[in-house]
View 1 (cartoon, rainbow, N blue to C red):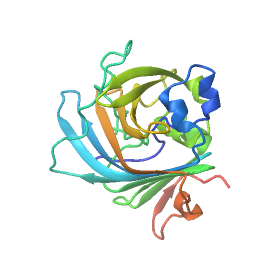
View 2 (cartoon, rainbow, N blue to C red):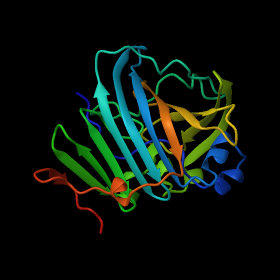
View 3 (cartoon, rainbow, N blue to C red):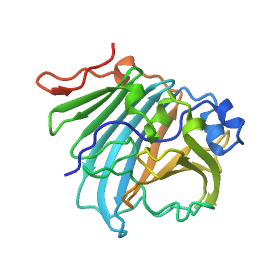
Length: 254
């Protein structure tokens, strides 16, 4: 069993103008004028020996600035399919090998949380809520305390990404243009992240794949599907109220 609790991951949502100062990448183009993002995804986790250890599906919803919803539904008994397009980035070793983002309690997903059963992460602009349906437990932390240096902080757009991460082009492979994101501080939950964009997309590449290397030598590969940018989002979709009977750990910021 894996527990998927808070702090999150996907380095995709800061202002394009900030990145332009350090050299444009496909990430810049993607972020330009991005207001909302909605997509489903498939995630495959591979251990340090190259063996698939977990598979899940889920949905992601981003409302800039500062709001995120990441929901995961683990699956079992299936072979890997999404983790076969990890490119090598100059100066980064095998950029496709070993992602995830580890901790003593188990592997961490792209949202920066550990996994076990259906999991929900909601960043509402002030707080980060992590809800484990199996445990009937919700954990809440202020945004500034919970999103220290995880991929999720990139999604929410609430931190200075240039201050905390190094971003560089990582070449083309398998029809995708890759961007490498590496945390500058040792406190980060992951070692590096690769973002793969559709190289042939008209008007700027769509985000297709995210590969995360964790500190335990695991690789999480996330493939995005049914992507919708700048579509309508209900406020209720990026807010969270603990269901009746759920244990709440922490105090939400008002």
